[in-house]
Length: 370
Image 1: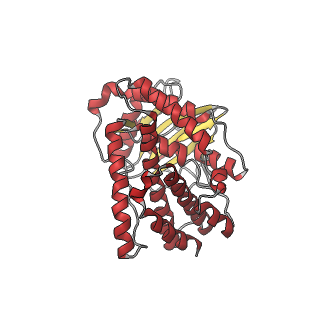
Image 2: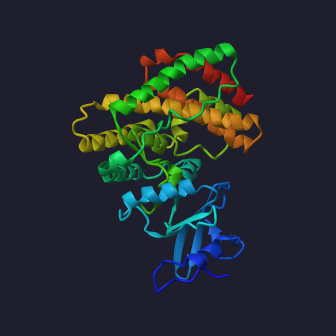
Image 3: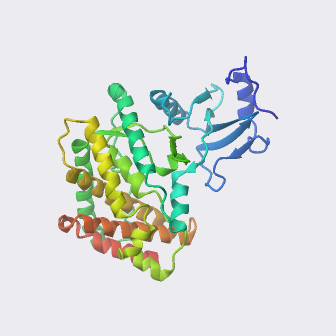
């Protein structure tokens, strides 16, 4: 089987050809390779690299999720033409099938998550020019979307909608944890008022990097929220540490030892630099905001605490249910536990308000290292 024919030299295949193509097994027809072969298959969205003559295309096939595909296409129209957004080649939404297909120009390089993880496993950091470039792009996206603000729906923002697992705790420990956890969520709610803006899900898995160029390849989410939540995903969750650590090292990480600095996506000094860059960019675009950098940092830290709690509970729940690679799950859990402790140190003396998170950390540490 060959790729669907091109009409009149353009990049728009016939609807009939694409309908036929979508009904085939794309992996077995010999023209498609998965973009990230190591990635677990997604039962709703599959991503492929398609070779067509001299061109490579980045193809997303949506399975039984037409609403998600429509949202992606709708959101993309705001950014089409920006130099860090791949050109759209075509889309096809057959009426007789639940499959949807969207094709962009292929983006060279690798996603930031894998690049961050590979770099840390080798004991190095990726160039610190990457984050400021991503921050600059975010500001361009924000200004592009702002004129259409009234068209965007208001939803419960990440991280406030992220589920937290508490089923490993005793009733007493859970009650204490929830008291402090609710304080964390209240601070995140205040972020929406203190630094309003947009959330574009610019996490490292959705950004491709190659030779200094950063391009976004996922447009499924635009929320009226705050850019701080994007910054947390970009700066803090760039790596989950793919290289398993020894038991003694795991305890070092959880205790917020210097080892945390060595395995974090970036050290705290560079993280502070990135946040100052992001704060200045935000102020430049929102001159009437009037909030200080210390307030910006405060909200980033509380959003980070929530994010790390979410990932700890996610990975330990997978571990307890026997899903995934045990060594990676425990190492990732230890990393996020250590990052919570590092952030609580940054929040002193204010962290007395969330002192009950410490026993929760110890309980999850016991589970992770048992």
